Length: 136
Image (cartoon, rainbow, N blue to C red; front, top):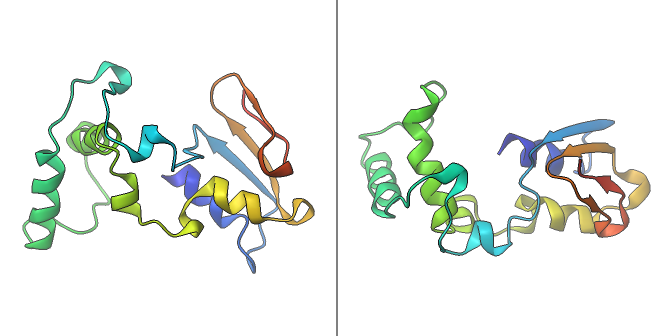
């Protein structure tokens, strides 16, 4: 989520950021890929049961698992990432406020006040919100 955070933060009032580089940014978080359950297998991953996330949230709420995890081997938390995508849990986990969704934030930003952004992800060119964003 670092890419989405840097992109969104760069357009907030009072923050002086002149340029942002976003690698594989999750831009349109309301799209069904992120917000609806479905048959999805990122990187060929098998379907992860929603109980994996429910059990994790329960463990955090009961103090059995830390609320903040700042260290760990990447594969340890991969099932949580996969179930979030496969079950469309991003709105539930992130919240639904407009400020949390990069494309919605960009749509409200005046073109001249937005910092320069370089996004790389895929091979398309995007012209949303009147901003020219090259997606390489």
